[in-house]
Image 1 (cartoon, rainbow, N blue to C red):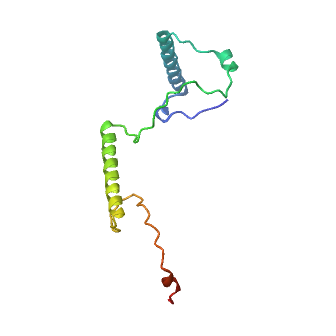
Image 2 (cartoon, rainbow, N blue to C red):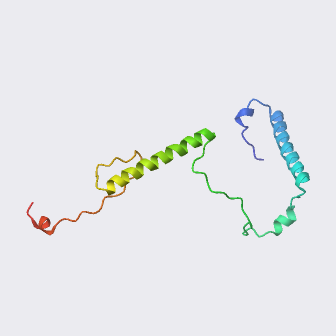
Image 3 (cartoon, rainbow, N blue to C red):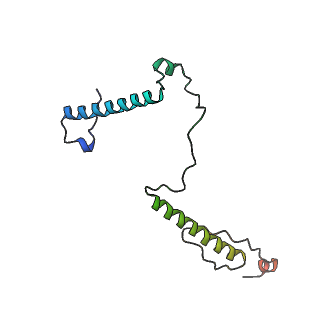
Length: 131
């Protein structure tokens, strides 16, 4: 028989109390599912229908949406991250424009990867001159 470690928040419970907590959670999940089935009229497939399904088939539709640029708990934090991101992009573009116009000392924002400089070919006379 498999024995599991109790959840840290329930370590103080006796094994009977622990079992009771688990039973209550399972019952709550079953009650919620039953209420949802009654509300929607949708019934579970059942074991036979599940066994008849091909495990390699993919769903006709998925509920995918684009991943957010930032994961943040609060809307204000997400807005601040967006503001800082756009500030970073603006600073990078400004520095890139300066570099393109010939300023090799253009300051790029910290944490960025500045564009590479063009290759400078040496003149043939410089290659042949003694060092």
